[in-house]
Length: 272
Figure 1 (tube, rainbow, N blue to C red):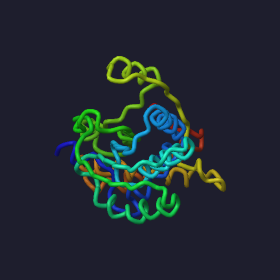
Figure 2 (figure 1 turned 90 degrees about the vertical axis):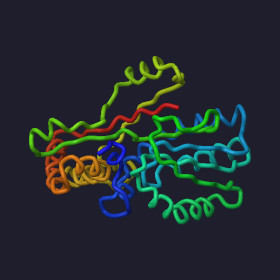
Figure 3 (figure 1 turned 30 degrees about the vertical axis):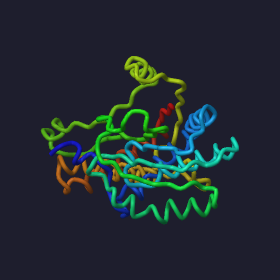
Figure 4 (figure 1 turned 135 degrees about the vertical axis):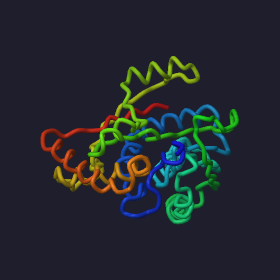
């Protein structure tokens, strides 16, 4: 089976869906918002557009990214005393992504919510789904003013399975260092690196919870849910559905044991 058919998040809105278990990704996007705001501010300082075309690369099936982008643009426009533009948004992910869930939730989570919060001054917004790999470069030149991508290659695997199957299982996951990211971007030559910031967030997504009390077992369960929502299709395709519950129960044990010894954080690299 082709990678493009299995490399997607858990769809729907159930207990194990990505939409329900993507608080960690939301925190990462929120923490990186200052970088996004500076990029938007630069755009509007030089040439404020009447229409703003935005592409979310690797949109998945939750509401995280799009709301943050639109709210950031609205905030900057008001600060600079510019009219909020009309939006055209291109949501991109692989064809196996649950696009149906995205468009089912938009009327309530997007149009009604933002219209109520921003009032009549909020610009109109048209939203289009574009299935396919953004590595293929299917956007025509000079058609998109703002690109955004977050957690598009975030894959991890742990568990107890046959050694032969484990040896044949490849996961497209790599955590580069800051120097590696800088070297790749500068060496490729298509972009220049204006700024790069690193944010640290808790493994269990508890950064936004003011009443949080650390419990290693609860934190491990949250981590397992986050990862299960992301990695289930890829793992199930290779090992079968029967291994999923056993795998993530073991993952909870491993993470709980690790957190009893030290508290770790994710390092998030953000650059415009």
